[in-house]
Amino acid sequence: MSPPVLYYLPPSPPCRSILLLAKMLDLDFELKIVNILEGEQLKPDFVAMNPQHCVPTMNDEGLVLWESRAILSYLVAAYGKSDELYPTDIRVRALVDQRLHFDLGTLYMRLTDYYFPTMFIGAPLDEGKRAKLAEAVGWLNTILEGRQYAAAEHFTIADLTLLVTVSQLEAFEFELRPYKHIRQWLDRCKEHMAPFDYEELNANKANLLADMFKAKMNQSAAS
Image 1 (tube, helix red, strand yellow):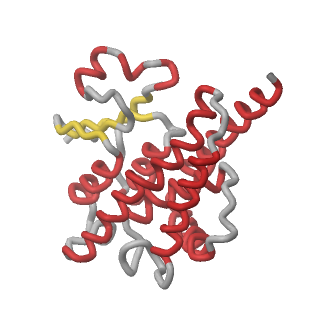
Image 2: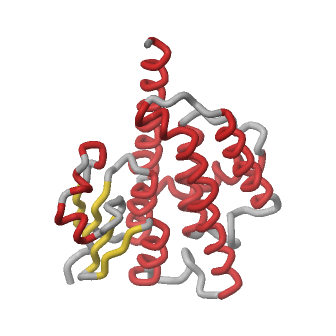
């Protein structure tokens, strides 16, 4: 059986979550970098495979998936030695799924809405979008109240994808001090992920994106 092929860009937060999970599962990918900053995702062979031409995209012996949270769920089901990361108990799984959707459709979306236009095209920061992001961070803080982890009594893929998002916020120097439950959960998750190359695969790449953002901010201020 050939290993799954992962088309990715290392600094991309959704790609980072896949790489971290692969470490947890002791799963080797055939890795193929797609530099979206250079438009490589628009090459005809890639568009033929994924008409949305986004990363991460995974091809596992003909099964082509994109959307990182769908890939996370599949990989645990296909390669996990247990259901711990994506529990089969339907009530617990429902909470995991809800947190995955919250990250995709609310928290991570609001992060990208606020930071990415500045980082990629030099647009001025929009304080209205920052307020929407702070609202979503507050919701996560409330979700985590009284909980060790986001959805279950242990670490799941819900924590993994939220960890990548929140650690990117931290790298962007979003003020997390008012959110006590998030800070406690974040420290707990970082400790849990430390044996799985967390610093190299996630923290360093989060700082790389943050450096790109700060450079664009400095460039805009100087112009």
